[in-house]
Length: 355
Image 1 (cartoon, helix red, strand yellow):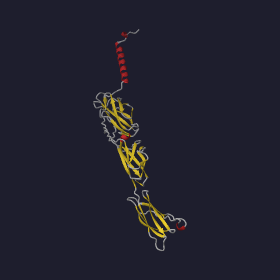
Image 2 (cartoon, rainbow, N blue to C red):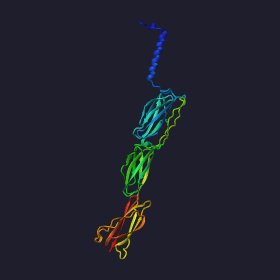
Image 3 (cartoon, rainbow, N blue to C red):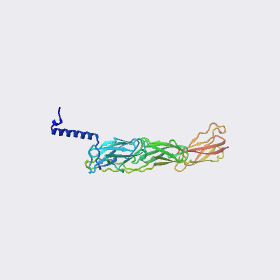
Image 4 (cartoon, rainbow, N blue to C red):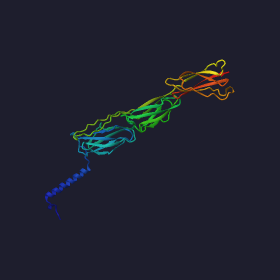
């Protein structure tokens, strides 16, 4: 049997040292490397406004009290109040930067992201705030086609939603409202181009408003890796968002019908069936006449066969005299129908007696 007293002292000391090293190594493997006391953590994001399910990179710069990056492999823990962040625990590189990926998810709001390592954190004002979905809307541009309708006509309403940086916001709900008429849909999500669409039918001029979520104000920042690992990076801190609502409006006008005046002249002596009919058309401002049709309504008069065909005149903007030979004696209702550039159809009538 071997007694401890039979082992030389130098070998016993070596065994003791080896055991201590093994215990230390095991402890190091179990305990993560954290930022030393007095370190400063600064967070930056490559984007501060995201659509639903959008992603961005979050960078945490760790600087020790001496002004140098910590040992590479230092653990940094990320947290967020909205969406998800992976990995939630990341390690720094040689320049002291740990990176994680933030995913916005499908809920509008402001994601507040923090980071901590050991006893060091980003502090009360160092969190990154990312506006998600409708919380990040910057402006809403609304358009109508056409902008002038015939009474009871339809107009297509488009709302283009842009974030604070001018990029389209997708899958964001847009609420439409109108001062007159009816909308086919009052809430529509934006498509892949950031556009929501509805239709308006109205008999009176109407103002359509499209509203989207909360409005904020912020500037995106991009973290940079220092060329010299001993030189800390000074990232830009994003502006704290403000709340509000972004909206836009467009006015759809209903055209005023043109005025049509029909005045038959008295038949000339000896030519009772020959009549000159004066037609006066007064279109509203900004509208022109595109077509005119005259219906003489003299079919079968006096036992004569068949009606006179409708007369297609074309555009009348002012006065024109139209001659006509009626088919026989009787009282006839002359109807003049005009169509204007807004699609409005209007008629004027007059009677003429042929003896």
